[in-house]
Length: 144
Image (cartoon, rainbow, N blue to C red; front, side, top):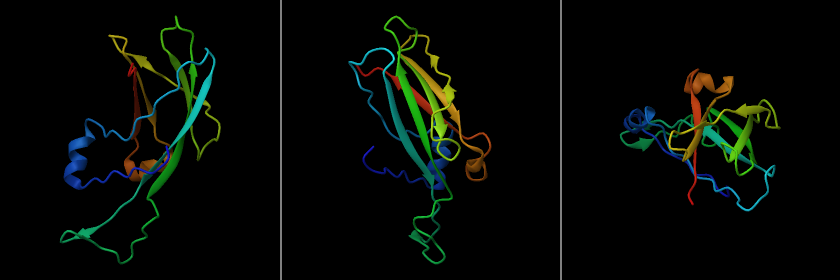
């Protein structure tokens, strides 16, 4: 990703997207590689807080660029053989815990075999801001 894409949520919008999730970005995977080829990417996530009064931000005591929580999710995918159940397998790590993807991302294939999705529990440092069960859901599908 070549730039940051902030997503602003006020209390009303937060309640609306809480149950269904919030789409953050799309990432296109490279094609034409041989089985066993790997691709690694990172996703920077940060939670900032801004208070408002009468529709205007309150700037006193506010540190603009200091997030309440932030971390990088590092994901490594590996292309599988064409006859495999899933096109890719994946491993991940939170950069605050490890720089090498060392956990298997359990992907579940949909019944119609068009999607393979998985959820990642946020690291313990995020629980004070987002709650102890906060997850990042990765939804994958073929755009072909």
